[in-house]
Length: 189
Image (cartoon, rainbow, N blue to C red):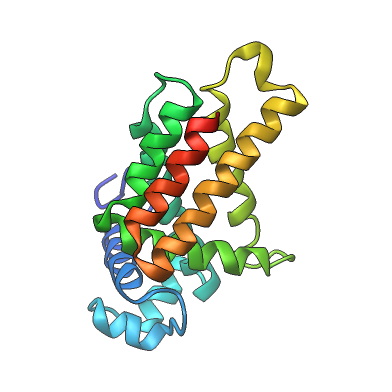
């Protein structure tokens, strides 16, 4: 069908989603209002509501778009190497300055998700993120160790170290200190 995007949405919907995603990457989620967003991307609140059903529908679409970027990172990490090697690759990606906007957006969405216990647009985002990253890390553990209590704990601790270091990095920009901290943890694996 002409005018239909590969995922089933209209070409205009995809175009506006990408423009809205770029806008949110630059400004963050806080204070996102339909009117300024629509104006900035060459649309109107009415069109956005028509295409996405509601503001929550737009937020869900933006979260899905953001998650697609996250999943692309997981794919880029690859399937070779042990847990320490993949941890180092993930940290290198997280620490790269060109990814700060995406990571700030992810952190804000993650935080909002933790506070959304209902069925709002943020619900489940953080849990899905943890599950995605845990699955990546599990693939880099020996199969016999993967599902043991020690294997699960090893992944949870690595994920906590990476997430905590990312928080500090976004807050302070102190790459060298955090590279050393993550490196020390990876060396202990």
